[in-house]
Image (tube, rainbow, N blue to C red; front, side, top):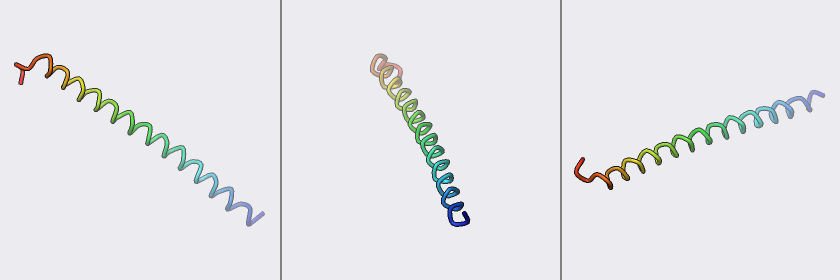
Length: 53
């Protein structure tokens, strides 16, 4: 039992870290997507209105 317990703890820690990692990755991707979207919008408006430079 004593040798089995740390294995479960390590597994749980890896599991939690994995979930946190994926959550972080997802939020980073969302931020990048939003930035890309805004940058694309700015390029688009610059393309339509070149006189606003």
